[in-house]
Length: 460
Image (tube, rainbow, N blue to C red; front, side, top):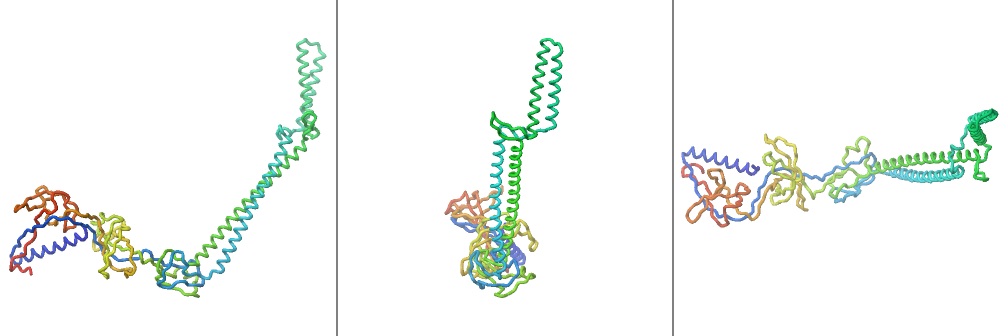
């Protein structure tokens, strides 16, 4: 049941109680009468009615974010301002200097990074050149081919010489033909091992020159020098990358310092966060804000009077039918001739108790036309439209009765007779009810009304 329904029911109950009381006192019984009403077409609106107070959702109390001396105040109470407009500022000379210094540090850091990137690139080119030179010397061999152990080479020569002597002694002994050729093969292998070991020894001492055909390529020491040059180039690359990383870190720190300086500068300037009207200005040029009170002192109050909200309390019986976006008609106690239209913007999920009734806060937003004179805190009533129909068949709600099975029926006048007819009903506002089927426009239905009491009842 809606609040308007509850109120109507309460009024009807009180009236009935009064009638019963008066009838009992006068020992008179009231009589019922019938009234014929034509079925017509029209509009019907079902609403939930609730009261509340107006508020300004766009209301900001603006403060400075740092201490200092007020250098300029650019607005007065009542001024219209736009979003981003500078309203007032502190003396910001030192803060602007800090921003400029931080900007220079960022530029220097960016240059250092670019220089570091060039150094890395240069070092990588030098490393590539040293690597190419080394590859030219060692191709198709690797550097490990040239790293020999001199003691191992000497041992290999000794082993080869012993194998050769033992094979020569075996030749002096009478041997079969097969044994002879086997010993000759051992001697050949020992001679080859000896030549290889002597060659390895020569290279290990850096005295051999390795070449293709008769063209010498490199000795061990030439190769060693190329290897060291390549190692040096790699070290230069590593150092350049470390320096670049340090430059990047320094640049990041400079950017953080710049952001901090800009943030401090922004704290010393108050700008309008939205289009609106200046409601109050609480400082003047030359005022000093200490570190103790700058955060708590409201400097400027800004409002947007073109949009307001009405917060109402809806009881738990009605709130399930209230939905976001529903239309609401707003009337104001101090301005009875003003009607405004808004819509449900918020429905609180939390309940409160009001005079023993569970209620929920509902916020209705609406735009305010210019020069309407609405003020925050004014009392207003909202009729939230939860259902409505246009151009539908309507009959008085008192014409609706029930048959023995509880289905809706009406009494229709046909000629001079009354006929009970079942109907399908739609929405109702307690005064009128929508007829979906069962009746036609222009037909006449019977409405039960209560007759005036007999004389002597004492009702009036």
